[in-house]
Structure formats: structure tokens, C-alpha cells
Length: 260
Ligand code: NI
Image (cartoon, helix red, strand yellow):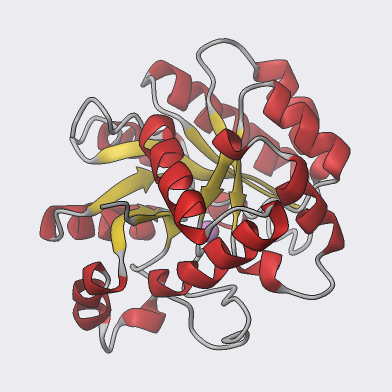
């Protein structure tokens, strides 16, 4: 049976401290088959490793979010590199640029974005890219670093349809989450309509970005059914077709086919 694949979740977040186990163990009965828990800090990556060890259906990503790159230095980066060798670590990230919060100067963000891209190539892992209010610089860096080894997902895709087309032309994937259910998300809806289905991944980014009708509440992977529904409606196909294709895409992107 086709199962929903959540390509981007943060179950290590303290929002799940009260009932993490309960939520995770209920996913399967709601049709969620696989989750990639994404590290956004050193601590988050460490907790991600623990989740992958505890739950067979959870895979992990090792990375440090642009807001948190202040904690990176050669020693901590070496630790991050070591985690990439773990069996259930399937990606590097999330990494990228965030000029909305600008918690770290752009130059520092760029430095560690480049280092994490190089790490992904070195480890032959795909990379999860976070970009907020930094579309032009993100594109510039990804173009500059682009080669046949580099596979990326643009997480919580918020770029223009033109840029989305360019990323898809590079063979990249677009991560589609709760925002696609928001009324005012015109650009994203356009992107979801026109992008080849094989380049789309479903993601919650939970506990953040709950879709309508749960907007504003804590998110979890079960809500991906609403996102699949919204994508299906925009494309005029069935929800099942969206679930099947995006699961297949995620398996391909994270190179899980070989492991299955
Ligand atoms: Ni995230």
C-alpha cells in the first residue's frame, strides 16, 4: 500500500516533549509510512540520531540551520561530518540562508552553507536547503556549487515560479507543505500546478506550518493528508496518486530504494 512520506519533520522539537512517542506510534495507522527527521542544530542532530535508533520508520538528516551556524567551528563541524556516516542518516541539512531573522551575519551563513554543501557532495548525500528572504543568494550559491553530484530539495519552497523552474531544471526537488493550503499562497499554488510531479516532495516541517484546517496549531505528519489533497486538487489528479508519486520521489531523493 502507498503510504505518506514526510520528507521534513522536527520531532526532536520540545513541542513534542509531552507526547512524542504517542504521536510517532500513531502515524502508521493514519497512513504515514516514513519520516525524515531533520537536524537544525547540533543538539537537534543528536536527538535526530536517537529518534532514528528508536523508530524503524524514522530516518534522519544531519545539519545546522542558518540561524544556528554560530555554534559551528572546525571541531563541531568534524562531529557533524561523523554523523553523516551513520546508517540511517540520509541527507545533510537543513542548511541555507535566512535573511528574515538574520540571527547570524550573511557572510557567516554563506560560509557554513558552502561547507555543508561540500559535505553533502563528499558524503554522496542529498542536501536539504532552507531559504528565507534570501532567494537570489541561495540561487547564486547553488548554481555555483552545482554539479552532477549535487542533489537538493528546496524546503518550504517560497521562491518565484521562475526560480522554481530553474531548480527543477537542475534536477532539484521542491518541498511542499502546509503553506499550499493557505488562501493567499498564489505563487506556490502556481508552482505546484506546473512542476513535474516527479520533482515534488511532501513535508510538514512540524511542529510548524500546520495546513488549513489546523493552521496555527501544532503540526504533525498526519496532516500531510490535507497537503496531498490540496496538491491533488491543484493538479486535477487523485490524492492517492499524489501520495504514491511523492513517496516514490522521496525514496529516490533520499536513496532509500537501495536500503529497502
Ligand atoms: Ni525545517
